[in-house]
Length: 103
Image (cartoon, rainbow, N blue to C red; front, side, top):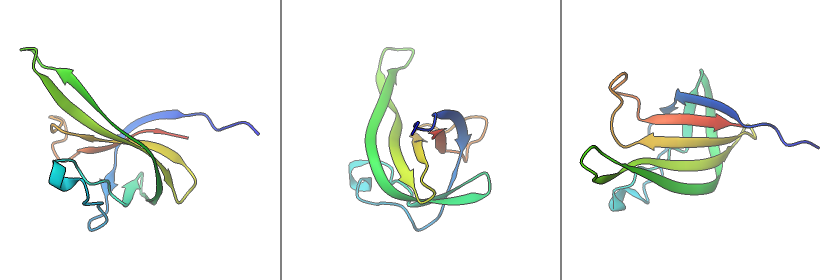
């Protein structure tokens, strides 16, 4: 059986209040939401497959942590890559959580 293809999405998601994993907050890390809404449908995270961070230099050469990433399996069976944007997006200041890819 062929594995589903990964599809690029890059759309904001809405975390469901009260479902965040708070274990990393003491270390200054965002808590992964246990549930979120994307395109009007609610998804529950049932398994975390991978976690990583990305950083990049600014114009002065200082390196800053930019995104926290998770690869998760949801209750729908989808494998999704989610990220938290450390700096607010100027286009949509409320959007900090994004769905990057889905398969």
